[in-house]
Amino acid sequence: VVYNSQGFDGTVDWSLTIETDSSTPYTPPNYGTEYTASQMSVAGGAVSVGTLNMSNTGTITDLNVKISFHMSAYQAYEYLNLSLLSPSGTSVQLFGLDQVGGDTYQTIFDDEAFAYIITSQSPYLGPHRGSNELYDFDGESINGTWQMIISNSQGFDGTLDWSLLVNSSLS
Image 1 (cartoon, rainbow, N blue to C red):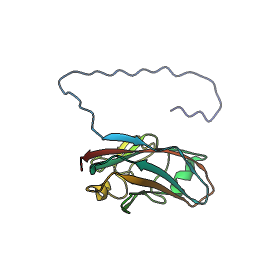
Image 2 (image 1 turned 45 degrees about the vertical axis):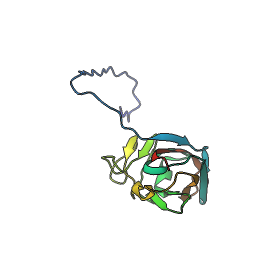
Image 3 (image 1 turned 120 degrees about the vertical axis):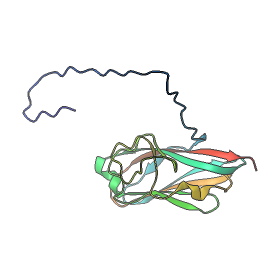
Image 4 (image 1 turned 180 degrees about the horizontal axis):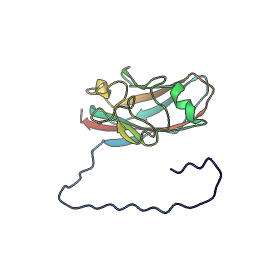
């Protein structure tokens, strides 16, 4: 990042060198089967609800949530409260008011993540732990209508792309 407060023109030459070896193999995490919901609108100063209908059978052994917000202003995120509601009635708050301060692009809420979203900084790319634990959904059926609930306390609007990443055992 180059900050130029005087308005002068110029260029910056830079490079990045990355060296790797095969001594430490990397196995990407298994976040589970992805079930993608339709993009939902986030209304300013209102509660917005998106749904994902699941007709699959199985019992949840690990559930993760992937989100990407696209809001009308950078400061909009601090006015959002995001929760997931299962078909069984279990509700888990992923983050609340003043807990997120910027972009959430391809953010994965994962109980096994190292970073907590409420102590990390934007952009929240990749795995983070939410405000509350997703293991509350473990043992529930994946079948039914899931709801993503967004409470927006200001007039900023936008959209949310979201999906559930589910590891399950057959019922």
